[in-house]
Image (cartoon, rainbow, N blue to C red; front, side, top):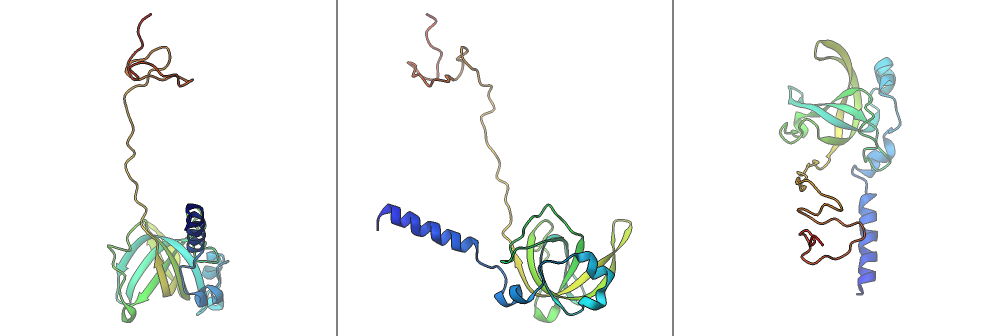
Length: 190
């Protein structure tokens, strides 16, 4: 296989992997993705037991009597379940995984992690953010996808001052990239 063909095959494979859905296709087809969370708070009886697909940024995960409860910020998702814009939060929600179906470990599902969720709407519940009482839409998780954790690697750079033409010490910078004898050292004074 030639190098050009190999690169072509790899690009197609990566493109297809980038478009792969992260949640079950049935949930993505059935669930409502385009919705305003405020409508859930205003008329909860209309949306009870309906399937929704959305994303979130985890605020806190707790193990409670019902099971595992995630408190997160709403983030819209695209048709594949990928988060669209994590800077556009649309309120908060609770997502509960019943204890009979497993546990979401708070050390893994920790603050700042991103999730995509397929869940049914259950109710509206009162909660608190600091001193303020707020209403949370509560969902029962049918499927949850935990996105890979973003790792910020340290950015190493050379912190020594750079000296530009005609100052050549300690490094040579020449906008025309002319070679100098003893590159990296000042040219002779003549």
